[in-house]
Image 1: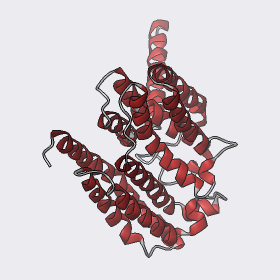
Image 2: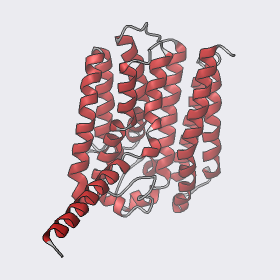
Image 3: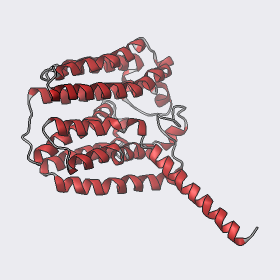
Image 4: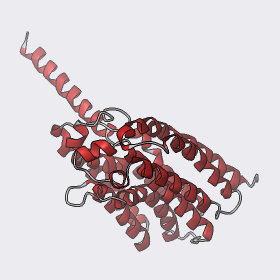
Length: 311
C-alpha cells in the first residue's frame, strides 16, 4: 500500500467521522419536534399582521433548528449519565451523546444561535429582546448544571411550557416592535394561556413514563412528586382547561379548542396507571409526538380558513 493510498484512506475516515459527528449533533436537536417551536413563532407573527419579511424568515429558521439544538443539545449533554440508563434514548426520543462530542454540541448550539439572535435583536426592540432573553434563559436553565429547572418539580413543567409558548409570544412582540399595531385582546391571551397549559400537560404526561427510573436515579420531577396516576390526571386537567381557554378566541379561532380532544383521548387510557407500570405510558408519549403534526396541520387549515373569511 502506497503512502498516497494510506493518506487518502485516512482522509476518507476523517470525513466520515466529521459527518457522523454532524449527524449526531443535529440528531440531538430532535428534528421531529422542530415544527413545535417554529410554527408558533411564524403563526403568531403573521396573525397579528406581520408580513413575510426578513424578520419572519430569520425567526422561523432560528426557532426551527438552532433553538432546538440549544434546547435539546444542552439537555443531552447534562443528562448523559441518566440517558445511558434510559432505554427510550437512541431514537426519535433523543440520542445518547458520547462524551467526546459534548463540547462540540455545546459550541454548535451557541454558535448556531448567535448570528440569529444578533439579527433578531437588530430587527426588534426592547420588548422583543426581553422576551427573547426569557426564552433563551428557559432553554439553558432547564438542563444546565447549577440551575437544572428540570429537577425542580412543577417548575420543570412551567419551564418546558415556556420553551414552546415563548416563540409565539416573541412573534407577537417582535411584530409590535416592528410597527404592527399590538393586539392583546382576550382572544390573544386565551390562545397563549391555552397553549401554555397544553405545554404543561404535555411535559407532565411525558414525565410519567420515567417516574420509577427517576426515583431510582435520585431525580426529582413533577411525576416523582405526584406519582404516575395523579400526574396523568394533572395532564388531563391541563388539556381540558387549556381547551376552555381557547374558547376566548374570536370565531373561527374558537374551533382551535377542538384540537385538544386528541390529546385528551391519548391520556385517558392511562388514568389508572400506577408507579409500578408507569413505563407503559411510553406508548402514549410516542403517539403524542405524532399528534403534534396532526394538530399543527389542522391549526394551519384553521388559520387559512380564518384569513380567507370562509367561516
